[in-house]
Image 1 (cartoon, one colour):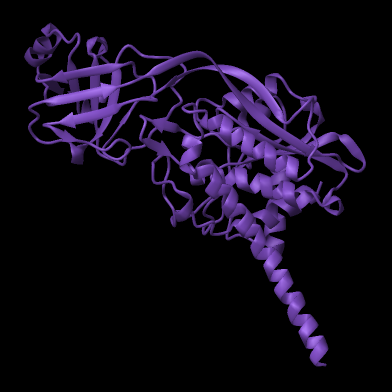
Image 2: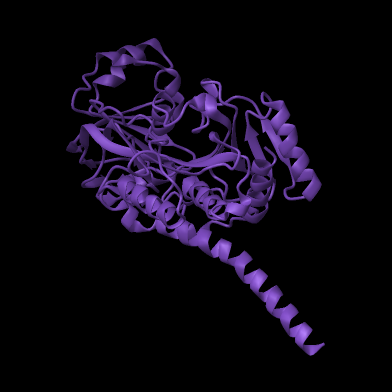
Length: 418
């Protein structure tokens, strides 16, 4: 009896160790993708390439097969980066990039001090006289500071300024979707809390670099199916993030989207056991350039490694670090049969609080697959326990992964249902 109890305890301990090891593996992936040496998985210091190489090594360790000579699908993009000095001083006080302000990613080089500026808002432009005075001013090589109220006034006059500083009353969020070109003026979004009531001097330094042909790559591996190896279920996620804003501030991108990348690798780890492979092949796709405009997934759908008509279903995972309130399924309301199946599986096992539907949205890498006629879901988690988004504080150590295990099981069951 004692021996039986001992064996039972060893079994339970081993089971729990394997189960917890999955989370350890996932955490290690997220930690690595978010480390400073990845430079925010963007286009400064080869951050995106380093992340792609790391993912390819993981796929190789799992013995996934690849199309062609390796796991990469290379292509080029035009991209503007901010790789060098980045400084904003107001009244000789140095402000913190990413916290006090952000610089739009299409900014040109700027290195100027301003002792005069124009402050504009709806109140400033409330009469014809003030409007006329505004239009009579010369703004070339000057600074304009605009309140959010002025955003309603579409004026070409603003385009004359060298720098436009927008006052932001919410949390600063950076985006790089407009980084495929370089603008003639720098736009700075500054927190109202960082802006003094009276500005005596503003010093701005931005070092920008535009590259016409910058090489990037998707990363793809797969396991062949047992009955229909030419038909695929795709599980995908974008691995890129915002990269660097200046040479000191980087955006780790833990939730967006080291979390989704880690789950796709974890799924590859699960299906590396051939006992789990079903009738159809499973492809694991890691898209680049999502933050710059869904560039990687768009390129893939225009240059597929196998016919898009051979895709049974596509699951895209993006921002899955929470889950206390369940998940949202983009395209759930238009691909009803599969959505009801996903929902039924969840209800049967009680994995998540809710599986709620959403309509079409061009907000992640499922979109171009869907537009090409591929049945596709984009899944993201819901919950207020973690709210970091496009900030330098979206860090690995703060990501809760609240319902990671439950979502993982739901996705596995959904894949096996085909």
